[in-house]
Image 1 (tube, rainbow over the protein chains, first blue to last red):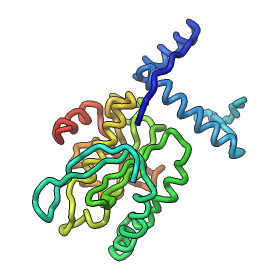
Image 2 (image 1 turned 135 degrees about the horizontal axis):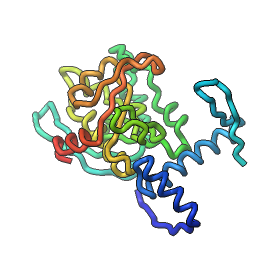
Image 3 (image 1 turned 60 degrees about the vertical axis):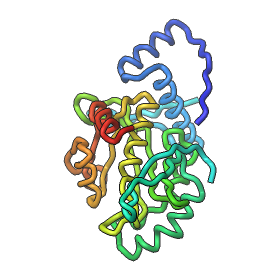
Image 4 (image 1 turned 180 degrees about the horizontal axis):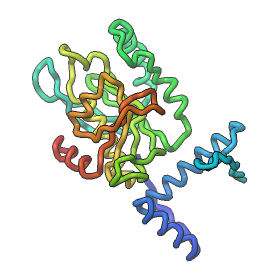
Length: 69
Length: 192
């Protein structure tokens, strides 16, 4: 599969978060951003089908909807 | 057929020697046609555990999602095996718990590659190696996992994958996972 390199402009805070997530998930920046893109795309496909994205607190079973604009 | 291919080797049981084959990094219409025209009649006759698997439907469900990727093994112009991986899951082995892995959602070898009279040996191994390579390419360090049908459990045990209890959340199938270190060993063992 052909691959292309892109330049990404991030603020210091965004880069800091990216570094934190990479360390936490044991992923390179490229790997983490690819996973983020896959997740964002999957969420969009489901929202476009008319589904909702909700989180459930496993202890209280309280559910909250994540509104994706 | 089109698509990206890599040369691989399978063991041709008829001649007792290695034979060339191709690994595709996507599942193409010709592969689906083989499952319907060539695989299905044999699977129905043998009443295999996964005879209901419909690859066309599986591919349609996964279409458009970047999380999913299909693979196919072809030899002699016929599809010898198919695999669908999902990159949305995380690991369960304590040392890698919560880390991303390549989850093998479906892996199937052609029905003529099962049993004593099989034509080719090594299709499952080639697809497992493709999943590990996919995991390495995606930055997941070789971590892979899967739920096994009962008929395939011994194969994954022979691959020295870590075996978990039956999973009540997944049709009571046994969950197997390969650690980063085992994946590296596995690739060395098969010469990849």
